Length: 414
Ligand SMILES: *Cc1c(COP(=O)(O)O)cnc(C)c1O
Image (cartoon, rainbow, N blue to C red; front, side):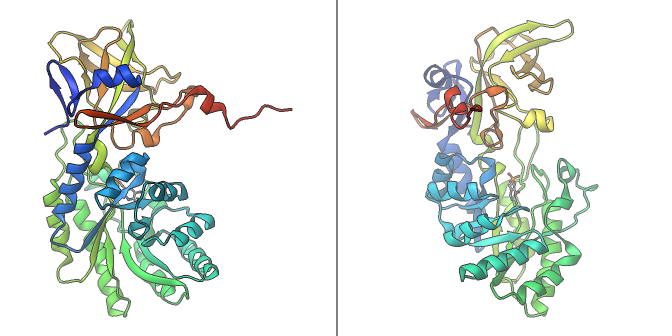
């Protein structure tokens, strides 16, 4: 059941008419459904119930404190990619013992902070990073648990979803280098080899690439085992897709079954780093039509949300369904849905059949992941408010920014 549905002729988030949220908190405004996040997290985690596992929400998908807190309450771990995300998870009440730290460019300071917090594991992406972490752990007098993120080199031609927007080369260590690096890590004084992992891309809608990547990683697990380097976990990353339009991503149960089946008799804890799959369809971006503009070739609906609020259409030419908040009753015209930002790339949707008048509210669907977390202040636009709905209640979880707040850190020359 979708948390965003029409009742009495207008779109609701759970039991709250989204129109009321617009009246109270203004637009543009992100709206999340608590029930949707809870149901999705529980369904995902339950799919792996038969297997020793840890679900680590990828914080970059949605890093708002209330969202992280909600997931922490559900027992989620977290996959972070910066010191800022570490601080957010800790501020939200996340368990440091359930944090994995990914990313190609961890600074010395970020490593120190993560060691001090006592995170579960560092996902290491290069040889120099291994050396740096050993040095920093030594200086702190601790041992750092590590896992190498390996590039499994799964052929992108047979799996086009992986290739989309992914620069494989920047991420992970080359497959052929992995064994040598594990041997090196074994001989370093302040590293504890814990696991191995990969993350092959995002919005994947087929199982095959996940399975192929895991199989490649497990070959390394076995080779390492035969050399006496025993790993305790394997991290399959994130990347499970959602339905934006007509995609049919694998169900959680199928995903879990095909991964756990590959583990065979190996005694390995399975780590998962889902981002989009947990929150993508738990949020919408609410926006208001400012102008309906008749072009010579196209009609434009100029709305008050823009690429700074939701970057995915501009960045990836991504599709988001757009719904009128008033239940559709036929008619209408074809619109380009665009924002006020001074860029031709500032569009939210192309050629949508919509029945619109000025001042109407629109819901941009599937905006719970990589929406607010990728937003910016481009064009000096304050970032949107965020609201979490819980049954009949709408809680403001992030106030709309003010222009004053945008300028507060700045100084003019004396
Ligand atoms: C972005 C990212 C994820 C989450 O990806 P989704 O497609 O949102 O599931 C997981 N792990 C790493 C290392 C990432 O960079």
